[in-house]
Image 1 (cartoon, rainbow, N blue to C red):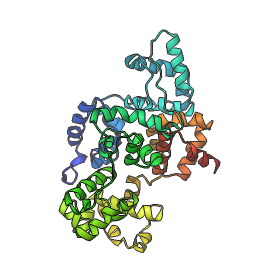
Image 2 (image 1 turned 180 degrees about the horizontal axis):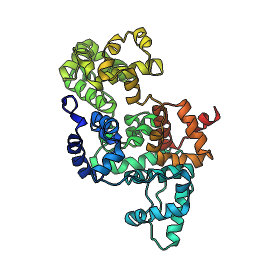
Image 3 (image 1 turned 45 degrees about the horizontal axis):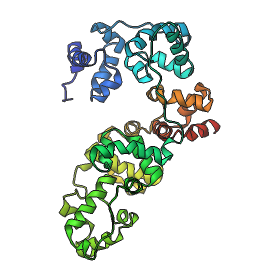
Length: 392
């Protein structure tokens, strides 16, 4: 948002002018996270500090009265949950997901279902017995699904038919097929290996003098860059057993930097002010994290000769704010609820006590650790990280 004069958000009329268009768009009072995601942290802070909090502002704007807070036992009662979810299930024609419960401000029901994984199952059975017709529940992919190449082939064939060729990394990512991409990379050696196994790849054999023609070099480099998401290095080429291309670039075309320039790829040299851009700042910080295995301290940044990251850190809110923003902060209730759908399946698979699991996660994991563990489960049904956490 544009810079506002001092005291601007202390005027309730300005809060009202900012909130009502968003409420009109989403059909309710926005949450603190939704305001922060729109860059409205000052609005959030002033609602809490100056205007009595979100519940008071919601009531004052006519967006819903303050709801009565109920103890856990209220939402653990099956009769209460059936009564609350019956109109939602009737509207959807099926049981709502945890995400849909949150969208309807039914977070207490979502939390209760995490505490008691059988709660939604029993609610569904009661609604069906009462005569409500619900669609069959969709089944999650079984453990090991993505390790079977036939399943990978089945997922990709419709896309190959649509594109007339193997889809690229960028095309799969644009369609939100992240689990598919993770499996391709983790289990089957990358897109090109999958392409070959599916019988779709053209021969890589080259005639003498093939790499002397810069058009052939450019075509090969762009194909690899599209696969890995950046200009390949000489090591990238050698790992793909295209050392002949790497040798030709070095011998005949002036080296990788010259080829990079000629093809219009952005050079890696950092111009002044680049680290003021948060995306670039994160890329360089993530490289340090990958090197040392954890979020660095200021001393560690100096030790790995990344003093420029230390210098610019205050522009992005300081060390603590960056750590939180990148997911290296602690696991919170909000983090757990954001993964409610997956955790609702993981807890029964482990035969775990939900309260014990939540406690261990909050004590031992960062938010990013939880993200990674859930992603691994969603990809191949692996619950090893959660089991190790409980056993530690």
